[in-house]
Image 1 (cartoon, one colour):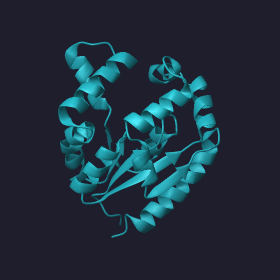
Image 2 (tube, rainbow, N blue to C red):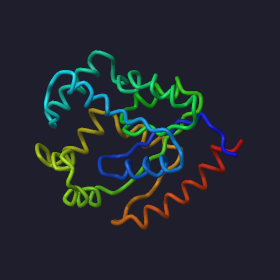
Image 3 (cartoon, one colour):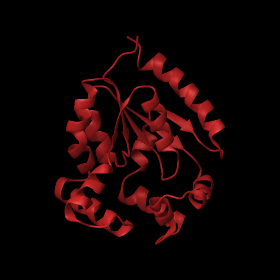
Image 4 (cartoon, helix red, strand yellow):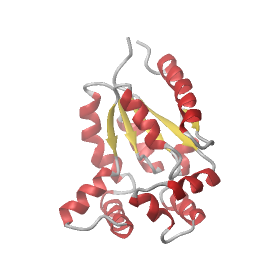
Length: 194
């Protein structure tokens, strides 16, 4: 029998494969909270179109009003509600402030980093069809985007402190699915035993 009440924050750079890892955990029965959904809700409430510019505006406004851990604070009630029913995966944890907030507030919280080298991630961006990915290159070079995420969003800290790292350094899903099998074995042995 697997223990419940575990929150797993998925961390990594843009296009590393975080959503695939989240989907894998959802398929194993984990509840799901995507922190960035808050941006979309706020855009809709304000009647704004969902663009890179409006996303940045809303994110900055929320962080100015609630602090750098705004997304963690504002999503905490939803996460706690899901934890009452089982385990939960938190997609889109970015900042060191969010990481520290969850470490303090959630009794059983770990992070899983998904790593893909810059060259692999930039190649992925060229083949993706989603608007957010197309916008990836719109105003900044890939390197500028990475630097901004590391410097402005404090993305490096949570990645460095990850309890487990999944290597997603090859193109294609076969390699990632092999890595996910290893991860699931570790998770069951180390975190979910009763």
